[in-house]
Amino acid sequence: MTIDEIIDFVAGLDGVLTLSPTAGTEWPEISWGDTFFYYSPDGVVPTKTQPFATIVTKDYPGEPSSDLNRPNAFRVNIAAGKEAFIEWTGHPPRQQAIDVDYSVTDTVLPHPTYSSAGWLAVVDPGTRTGTTTRELLHTAYDRARSRYERHSGSESR
Image (cartoon, one colour):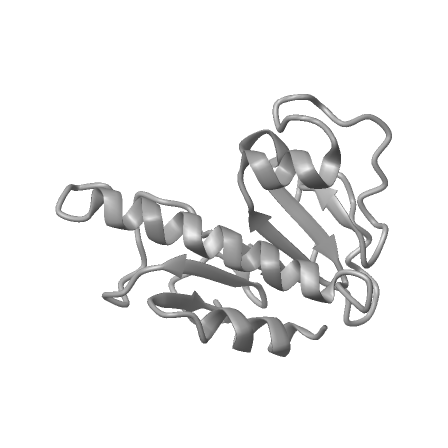
């Protein structure tokens, strides 16, 4: 899968706001070149909720390395939730994984920083994880949409 294929897939879901910060925008420099997906049918970037998925093109400071300094490397981060997290890792989100190599490609892994919140990650999704990545992205989308609908009419954003 390419970054563009993932963006096209997620952006094609109803109510998704895709944010791709670049130089010269209001977004922090660390986010330039990355992509953030929100469920936001009004097209406004939510201020009180996290994206349901991201694509990052560099290792972030303070995170274990995913070796994203390689040419064309990227990582898809997915707020898949507890059930999917357990299914893919074999343990609950709050149980710290031991000896995870976060640079392994085309493999579903706990997120290097946000695993305790049920986030999963895939570095350079390919033939082994392409379908799974799409399914997990749809799961995260469904969760974000449900959360939005539960809180619509309240100040949850």
